[in-house]
Amino acid sequence: MRVPDQHDSTDCRAVADVLARVGDKWTVMVVAFLSAGPMRFNELRRTIGGISQRMLTLTLRGLERDGLVTRTVTPSIPPRVDYELTELGRTLIVTLGELSDWAIRNRLQVEEARRRFDGRDETRSSGTPADRVAASPPTR
Image (tube, rainbow, N blue to C red):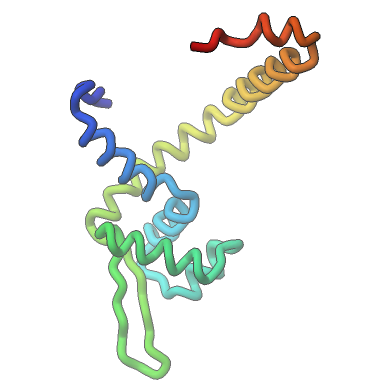
């Protein structure tokens, strides 16, 4: 991973913007299911489960706007609308797969770290007021 130059905030904003799109829980699921091939809207909605029609619409529009998904309308009655990953969208599959694998491999360690951290906060908040003041970081 390239560490940005401290004066290059444009790169940081660009990375944050893209990560906001691809790191969204629904985006990850949509990309994962579309990696198997084109799907219709209702097929995607049934397959994902738990996503509202509005959220799926917003997610697909965002992915289409970012060039990761194409929307193809086939004139018929009713019209058929298919969604498919673009070439750019398909490049995400490997990266999301690696991130997913990392999350699965390290889930227990992350959960344990959270328990330790949360327990530390409970210990701090259960002491006397003097203990809490002593444990709190100095203010500026």
